[in-house]
Amino acid sequence: MTDAPTRIQVAGSAGTAPYEVLVGRQLLGELPGLIGPKAKRVAVLHPEALAETGEAIREDLASQGYEAIAIQLPNAEESKTVEVAAYCWKALGQTSFTRTDVIVGVGGGATTDVAGFVAATWLRGVRWIAVPTTVLGMVDAAVGGKTGINTAEGKNLVGAFHPPAGVLCDLAALDSLPVHDYVSGLAEIIKAGFIADPAILELIEADPEAARTPAGPHTAELIERSIRVKAEVVSSDLKESGLREILNYGHTLAHAIEKNERYNWRHGAAVAVGMVFAAELGRIAGRLDDATADRHRAVLQSVGLPVTYRGDQWPKLLETMKVDKKTRGDRLRFIVLDGLAKPTVLEGPDPAMLLAAHAEIAA
Ligand SMILES: NC(=O)c1ccc[n+]([C@@H]2O[C@H](COP(=O)([O-])OP(=O)(O)OC[C@H]3O[C@@H](n4cnc5c(N)ncnc54)[C@H](O)[C@@H]3O)[C@@H](O)[C@H]2O)c1
Ligand SMILES: O=C(O)C(=O)C[C@@H](O)[C@H](O)[C@H](O)COP(=O)(O)O
Ligand SMILES: [Zn+2]
Image 1 (cartoon, helix red, strand yellow):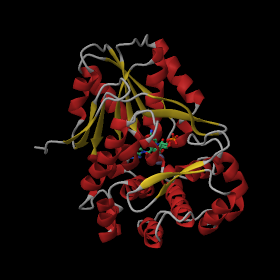
Image 2 (tube, helix red, strand yellow):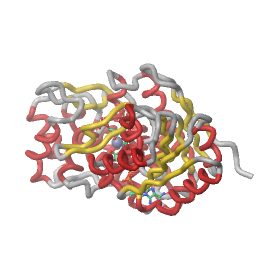
Image 3 (cartoon, protein in one colour):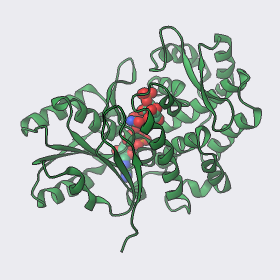
């Protein structure tokens, strides 16, 4: 017998329907209920690494009478391209996928970003369900309806706000996740700690080694607390017209690092460096106290996340940051902290401040 899952509500916003994020074990029995009675066809999008899982889900849905297809995507960031999206559109077209049919995205954040984007664009929008299988996917990517792909110019530059009909976080999926990917997801959990829920930081600081494994005593609590932070924010501001920008803490520099590394760095690793940069920027701008700024480096390093980046790359990073989605005209905008759990926007900082903050993360 399994325990009942935790259910976290995400309110409908900007005309979209509310949905639930379930956290627990053996949740796949929830899929047909979420797919709903109108669907005839279901497309299960999964990465190469989860070929067996994707096929098992497809078979299960087929045994329940759906015309189920599996669409295998490349692993990780290689899937977030227009070519992969076009491959999915072709597969849906060849299956005569209609507006009442449903997409299921099973995988990490890269997979659910593409699956959601394909769902947002196919026939101008079909229903989709997220089944995140990484820590990062569960606590962040699968929740909130930001879907998208990268372009040559940068990260997530094409996309749509298209919330899922439900999110199933089956903690058992984390057992097969390589430790490198598990730890990368901790960066977004730590982000939630700094912007909104410091209890997260205390749980990690009490035993950083335990935080690095799904067998740790606080795994479910860390995941659920982070989902609650995200759910609360996106419930009130789906389309990032204000509050939602706080979820972008550390991301202005992180996305530039990812592009500069041709996406060979995991998103979470880049976000770790980006948060140290943002903390230093906050300190230099006279907003953030020394102890909270230093705490960033300490907690991130304690779980094995990077806190520095190649110092000679600054001109390229600065150029890429100009296309960050928070930029308005020529004014760069950063999320910084006024104190612990007090995120705010820093508009058009002096270039000397940016350079000084960069010096603090330059390896
Ligand atoms: N939409 C959003 O709001 C949002 C939020 C945060 C991050 N993101 C995006 O999420 C992406 C990062 O997601 P990620 O960290 O989950 O990485 P990922 O999706 O690239 O997955 C990492 C690797 O793990 C594999 N994998 C996935 N689940 C597995 C499992 N259970 N066992 C073994 N291998 C598994 C994947 O195939 C991949 O090779 C980035 O593209 C980022 O931009 C989006
Ligand atoms: O949900 C959000 O909003 C976020 O900013 C969460 C981030 O962790 C995530 O990486 C997001 O995809 C970044 O969005 P972008 O708009 O900067 O591409
Ligand atoms: Zn992120």
